[in-house]
Amino acid sequence: MTAPLPPSDTAVSNAPRTPAMAGDDGRVLRDAASGELARRFPWRWLDEQAVLPLRIESGAEGPTAWVAADGALSALVQTALEKRLAARLRVVPTRASDIRAALLAARTPEVTTDGERITADDQLASIDDLRAQASREPVVQLVHAMLAEAVRAGASDLHVESTASGLRIRQRLDGVLRDVQTLGMEFRAAVISRIKVMASLDIAERRLPQDGRTRVQVAGREVDVRVATLPALHGESVVLRLLDSTQSGATETLESLGFSEALLSRWRQLVHRPDGLLLATGPTGSGKSTTLHAALRERSTADVKVVTVEDPVEYRVEGAVQLPVNLRSGFGFATALRAMLRHDPDVILVGEMRDVETAELAVRAALTGHLVLSTLHTTDAAGAVQRLRDMGIAPYLLTGTLRGVLAQRLLRRVCAACRTERAPGLAEQSAYAAAQQRWPAVGPSTLSAIVFGTGCSACSGTGFRGRVAIGELLEPDVATPSSLPDLSGDGWRAVAAGLTTPDELYRVLTVELVG
Image 1 (cartoon, helix red, strand yellow):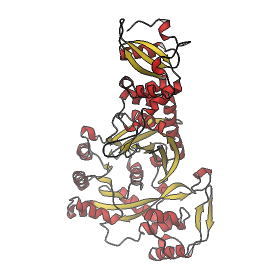
Image 2 (image 1 turned 90 degrees about the horizontal axis):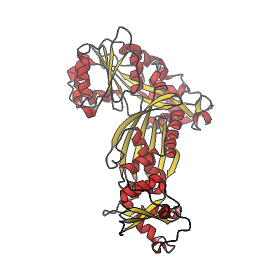
Image 3 (image 1 turned 90 degrees about the vertical axis):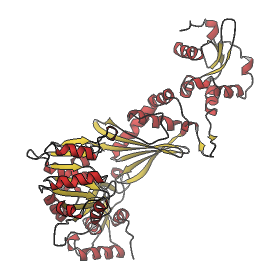
Image 4 (image 1 turned 30 degrees about the vertical axis):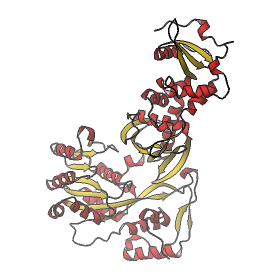
């Protein structure tokens, strides 16, 4: 370590400006901010300390570094500058605002060779720089506040999206995205770096997607957070999936899901069978995992061994052995399924049939006396059969194992605090009458009223709070046609029961109102 400079070297009171600092245009500062000496230090560190190395001069006593600073340097800052510059220091008195303006000007947007416009935040910075940004107390508090607000509102996902002007923050509440906040450019790199640090991701990697996870405590509640990053035009976008063990999805029973009594009765009979394959289908976010975990809670008793393999383990099931997939180590669905079959399970949950190998193993497990539950991404129940055939599963295997397919959707539930009624329109009456005529169990012969929410503080002005499930059930090994309605018919059942609105049903099922 170099010896401390004498007071005369670092004193700034009554210190004259050097010729190099003459002029008011800041040209010298801007040149220094984009020069080689400045690039030896993290940009954020120079900005925080309001210091800027200007030039190094040789002398009889060794090299001397001229540094712009607003006041005397602290011992730590002085030592860091001396070690990195390998020179004695001389301070040029300069306003901190001028130094920071020059540093900012050096990071203005530039154009790449292919014409793509990028900002300095999109350029590679040092890891130390990124970590310094992520560790600043205001940034930590900001990210924690974003998470706390999302958990308080009951959001399933938090979207942090880079834009040309900064960051766009959105929450997915009851399946619908809504804007909640916008942040300026000065927060973009810092907020995304903070999220990466929390999820143990590579903060310097901004050109490739990354996946990670973390766990946070919000108001005494533990929340698992899945983090996925994606490089985009204006910088990285991040989605945080919030899995709150205290939310309804972790404690739902089959009765509380919202299915009709007739469908629930048939599904419960299938769940209590000793063997066979049961599938829950629907798009992402349709409640498939919630339904299967609710079924597992019924089967997880002292005389039944339940084993699950999931990516990740979303909800805890008491008494069950739950295996998280770890693709990095080669522990995928197929490997986990082979391993769990040697542990004498009675009921098996496979989080998702993603490939042919997993599907074949699940079907053969069902053939050997196990009850296997899993999910598929299909639009309706009948599509699951064709999907399995396309994956290479022989028809005779499906005939011997597939017991039931439950296709489902989630509709937003009318807020109980601001619900009111209106008379149904002609088109709504006509659509309901057609559904009721085909499936009399849908509800009364006529639709007397439409229940809707006016919007209040309890539902954040949306008129909805929570969701209700609708479904259709296919039982391939049952000879008689089912009297249960399809998704559309079950949706009108929910409308007639005052649980949701026709507009919500049309939105989810993408059905256009005719008439």
